[in-house]
Length: 277
Image (spheres, rainbow, N blue to C red):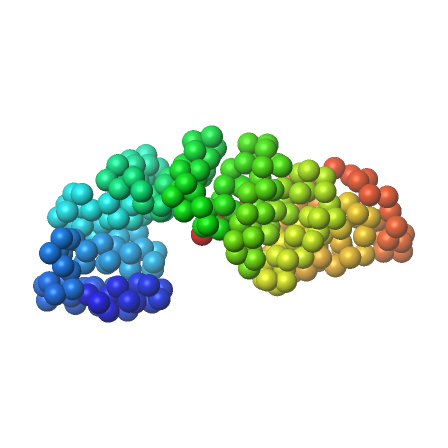
């Protein structure tokens, strides 16, 4: 079971699955411990299966874990995530709330609840869940980044920008934090700062198509048409199915018209923020 846990931590889920299956078949009680017993083996197997996208099998394993140990909070939390991936949102919320009821101080169930509610468009409830997670772990950059998404959808762009600021202060290499800072600044009309944020996105991840789109959008509003065209062309080369990039690129004057067109000449399509893992 030690190997199963180690493989899960490193993201080698296929090896973790094999190790978990072997340990469960052998009844490897040495690694399970007295408190959780075989439930830990099933919970680790559920994580390994979910990591490979085998969600139905993962759910069956998680069900075994909570069946053996009904008060196993972490297993209930994992079960909630699996149900979310299976688009059983009601079940995902119920399972995650069960994890919270069993261990109110655990951070991840609160954060997961926020993400589930966010995906359902229940933004005020999602914000409350993220705030509860941050009360327990105020330095988690991913939660701050996800909180900024919810605030953006609530139209609280200044707060969304501030939340994204905290995310990148906690982790300067968090791509979603910089991207969400950029989208909030775009909504606030602060295009120069938005361009700087999107520059950070594409510096950290040159293949981030949406980051190139954001950069092109900001540059277009600054009247830097040639630079905007280059950024948007790069965005579409990475992902041709980007209506926002297509629309902005189509609105730019042709190169021979010069780069010094006035800023804010057209209304921009909406640039939504992105969720952190």
